[in-house]
Image (tube, rainbow, N blue to C red; front, top):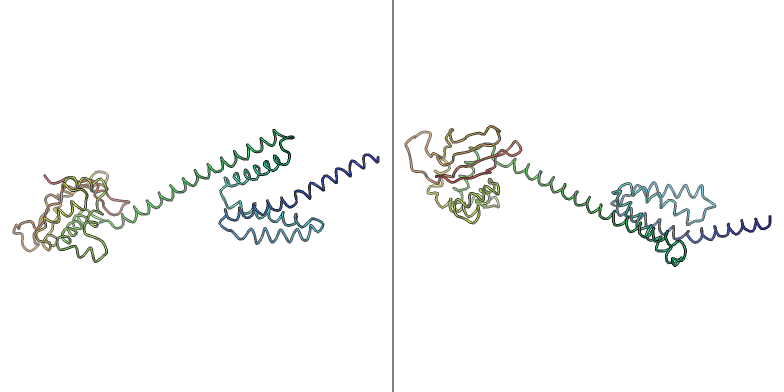
Length: 306
């Protein structure tokens, strides 16, 4: 009986020694985990107010015989777990891997790999694998979120552009002629709005159509082709005010969103005088338009006049 009592007392002493040995490392780990989770959660405060303060009150009331270190550790762990609910679950894997790897390193140093060598090495490998896998998945998720954000920005930009573009093919042709006329008079209207007539003109073209327009005019880019075309305007005022787009010049495709405008036969006259007059400016060419998001029209194809 005495021997059994001594063994029980020895076990109790070892348990107490282990408890004292891990008490403060556990507190430090809980504090680190809570602070890391706080940062990852975007500095959420509610877990600290309810989990932290509430947990400390509970521990003070119910854990009077519990050492102070444990009474602080438990609320910190509650806060850490609560905060981790705000973050990507893959962060859980990374944090758990860091803790496992750190614990395995401490064990390796403490035991010098003389005992429990397979377990210690396995914990090291598993912790490293968890950190690696979690980091890779976080990077993948971040890239996907970036792509989705960019897609949303592109969609919003396309929607905004569609609202600005002319609602009808005739209005688009008139807009192009207005920009050419403005450039022929020095581009003062566009400059007053903080832009340029060339930029406003090319805004109505898709990149492919702008390239086709530049190539047809032998220019490097769309603004260069625009300047060459604007140089052919002989009477800027009449070019705008006498413009008429014949009804037969616009042809709608079966899809009801694509149209072709024959802007090679624009007419210039007066509703009060049908006497033929010399064209005060150049013909534009054949324009293929497509309605954007059910709103404005964009030039998606260009062919020069024969």
